[in-house]
Length: 188
Image (tube, rainbow, N blue to C red; front, side, top):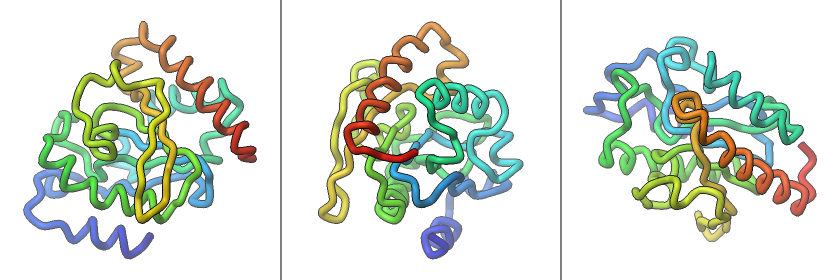
């Protein structure tokens, strides 16, 4: 993990890196069977150097508790490790550049389940850049280094704060994630 962090920190000519205070790598249990991947750190996360803080972190904690999961028992990170200026959506070029590191990050954590929260995470891992509402809620797979990882695409907590009417769809996704956790007999 230290080597990966050093590789990300050594990126050159990157506006994201140049405009950020901290590289936000990930938090939680690095031995967890569940890995959550969000879009990019926001202002609070950038300042503190930790993932899912403030209102977004509170919502994510509540979402996970609704399916009896403590956020400290999962591993959470972002598709992009540096805060985009003014919290803008990362460009396709930025997503592609960081996806190499994200795929390596998944291989290092080696989870049984990957949850992609938001369109940036979806695009970074699957290459899909269409509407997340068309892709969410269906189990998909990605193969990295000859290993298959099941993944679920869902809305990001920051999106749900802006559009709370979509929480009902995230609840459906969370129930499917809980079923998969039970199917794999994951202790979490």
